[in-house]
Length: 385
Ligand SMILES: Cc1cc2nc3c(=O)[nH]c(=O)nc-3n(C[C@H](O)[C@H](O)[C@H](O)COP(=O)(O)OP(=O)(O)OC[C@H]3O[C@@H](n4cnc5c(N)ncnc54)[C@H](O)[C@@H]3O)c2cc1C
Image (cartoon, rainbow, N blue to C red; front, side, top):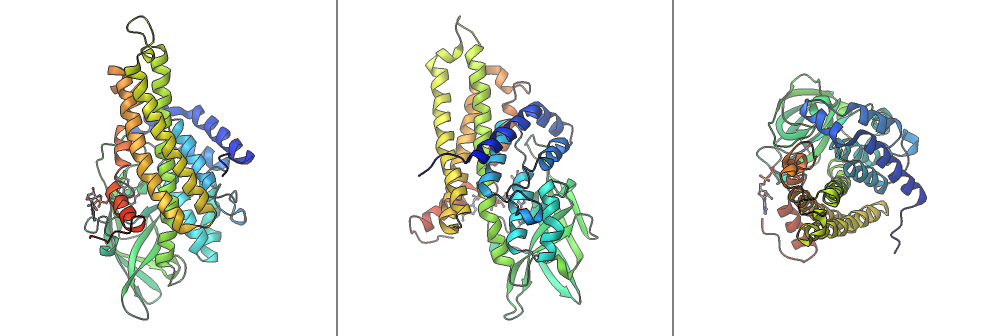
């Protein structure tokens, strides 16, 4: 058992942290409140190779694994910039294309995903289906050389500045006629694709959107991979998604605790720093323990995934996602408390994360669905739904 990062991974961690600190949480929040995107940070991270760390070198990436992308996600979050689109574009979409895209798709999309010049959102959630992916109602019909997509998606992050959105739809299986999942690359300016913004109580530059697909016509090669790629391609995105989301929560927890520790070490109310009161320090110490425990599971999941041990990685990724979401929510809440009234101000940069850490217990998979997964696959209980 080795808990050390490789020298390259250590350097990556330090370099990403330095980049994140140069921008800082104030930059992230200013962009969010102005309705703008973190374009400069994204572009710089792309140029330095951080967005493409897990993309194969032959397609312009760093040739590393999900562990490397996990480091990027955690460190940017730990410096106050939890960039949600890291989870979508490099973690989900690039992994799916690298593993299941056609050669033409890999060549066309991966180099630009690696340098950050191309953004691809990901759309699976639907208003009617919710967590039950078997009820997906977005359907792709073949019409001559084209695909025609119809359906609705909700909560889709970042569509407003993405170039494409990878849409999970269903098509009729050629042999059986049954509807099976299929993934499509839909340009965000495609005719028939419209969107409306959801008002969310989350301070983030990435907004969530409702998407309407009305007779969206796509060329044959918009289908990701070949006709049979659908389900394996979809599953290929799940573990990287959960691991990188978990890394962002862990990083956010670290960020909140760092802010709180700095504050409690200097703020004096009774003639000495408030951190000397155990009633202030112990809850922070407890949260630090929860964050560190959860982080261990994140890196276990990433390591298993990079070793190709997908089933074990799936269990660890779900557990990591569950544990980090709880730890981050606890860390942010505890950090606010330690700041007193200042904790609720924008300037102190902690309450700004409340919405995001709360959402971490819901998306991309809710804590209840993870408990269902663990009940079934770890404890051997019968499926109840
Ligand atoms: C900030 C944010 C960003 C998002 N970004 C994206 C994105 O980019 N792309 C995308 O496709 N989606 C995105 N989502 C959607 C997200 O993945 C879903 O919200 C999530 O999967 C839960 O689905 P739902 O909202 O339909 O909840 P529902 O499925 O309606 O569930 C409601 C509640 O019931 C519980 N529940 C449901 N079924 C069961 C069961 N069998 N047993 C026990 N409890 C159950 C759930 O746990 C939940 O608490 C985002 C959501 C948020 C909040």
